[in-house]
Amino acid sequence: MNFHFVSLFPEFFDSPLNAGLMGKAVQSGIVAFDHVNPRDFTVDKHRTVDDRPYGGGPGMVMMLEPLGKALDSIERPGRILMMSPRGRRFDQSMARELVREQDVTILCGRYEGIDERLLDLYPVELVSMGDYVLNGGEAAAVCMVESVARLLPEFMGHEDSGEEESHSAGLLEYPHYTRPDEYQGHKVPKVLSCGDHGRIAQWRREEALKQTLHRRPDMLAGSELIQEDIDCLRGLDRTMLGRNLYLALVHYPVLNKFGEKVAVSLTNLDIHDISRVSRSYNVGGFYAVTPIEDQKALAENLLSHWLTGAGSKANPDRAEALSVVSVVDDIQSAILDIQSRTGQSPLLAATSAKLDRRKNAPAPLTYDWVRDRLERQPVLLIFGTGHGLADEVLDRAEGIIRPIRYLDEYNHLSVRSAVTITVDRLLADEF
Image (cartoon, rainbow, N blue to C red; front, side, top):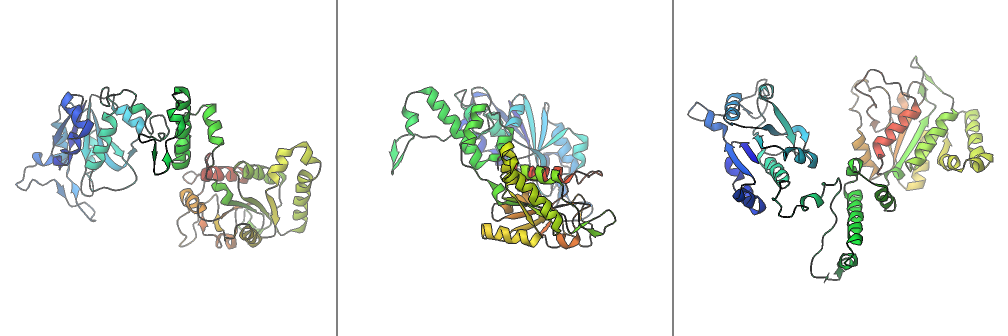
């Protein structure tokens, strides 16, 4: 397999691509590297490859002509990749794609970036090694080349080595041990010395599942899990962020379609469905917020039927879901209840189907930001009925979560649907 590097610093690759297994692969002809320096295609005595950006701003931009000539000089470039934080995230599946190629060209940018017109003139694919910034693309290119090359036949020396490692099966790899059998009181797991290959394989699979759940639960969404895997995962302790999440459905103060502050009636469906979502995701609690006495009485009658009345025997699962419901007068009552349960004041995050267009309104909260806060403190997620929460509620919140379909014009989900989608985005299947 041939890798062609387009880089201003070809010497960067000398050591890493000639060491260890990569060096042996070069010597045996499994992989080959060549380097093309855009400076070799300049026409001035200073060998200039960069210039000031149009529109002003810091730094310099790599010029189009040297880069284009450098690419043109490669007889068989194959797929042309450029390392860029704007690109597709590189992962094991992309490594498997690239290993099928005979030639791959990797363009390593420097400075503030390249002249964007290069992407219009050449079939360049942008590739990112992660959400961080490096001085140039060379270090990222080395990582990518090693990930791809080690999948080539004969590169690893043992054909199973590459497939048993982290990410190859959509999971992190199981732990490894070697001699001595005991070191400073820490012993090698007995199962690895039992001689039963079936038991060892099962232990390794279970450990891979455990490592992935505890260290990279996000990977499980794309992993191929059989029933035995899921049963194993269910039996493991895991981070339950839902325990720190509380939901409030506000019926007053909310707005009507004229923007007037009103009270809205509770509905049976809202209480039932949101309680079921709360129980399914192990949410800390669900508050139905209304100061109106007849509405509170209606809710209490509903809860009484299912929790202590005939409904509790007819449908125990529904009773279990409704056990998380509390009826309170206002948001402050919910806050005080959460404080008494957890010993902490909750962060308030409001929701809305519309972007906050009030003057000097801050940027909407993101799901990642709220999830991060859930790891440290309780969060009260506030939903409105009618045509949305009144300003006095929004003003108490830390911010408003970005609307579910914020790029589309139609955004009129029922509050039950909005609660379900929002909670799932925060907690997914693993939390």
